[in-house]
Length: 54
Image (cartoon, rainbow, N blue to C red):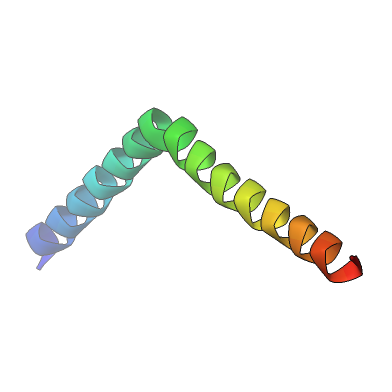
């Protein structure tokens, strides 16, 4: 039982470390993609408001 508990702790630690590395390496690409979508959405909203006014 103790061995199984240790294995699960090791697995959880490994998963968290891997996810941290992925966040560290890919956070710029992810942030760029998210910002691109937000900018696109806000631009389309602004243009939609302008076209409605005219």
